[in-house]
Length: 173
Image (cartoon, rainbow, N blue to C red):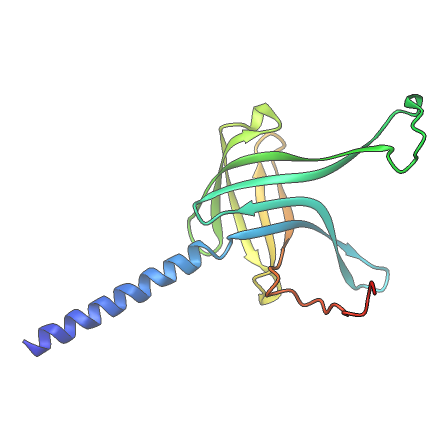
């Protein structure tokens, strides 16, 4: 009897550990990501240049990509205060669901897209974390229309508890 109880406890522990690993792997992409260009400097160093494009990957297997845009207003409007010469807005580029196949491939199923021809399409994406960090992500996908592979780099937007910026309390006083 004790042996059966021991095996049952061991089975429950193993099952809990295995399901926790699946959840961690499933949700390692969860978060807010900012599109990032990698710029090579003349001296060979690489600099990350973050752009105002964000991908929000939710734990419920939904995602959306949005961009902040600024459009110059026409000169003929004669705006007296030159501070307001742009229309600024944030637009959702695409929305959809995703499914993680394994630790290097996930699928996006686009349900809405700013380009209507992209709506109701699916993409298989290869992903990997760069420099063994889970806050810098490289995604590659194949564009069927152009018959070409594309690569993107995304930087995780950190939460206040993860923020490494030190704020001087004397600033602004």
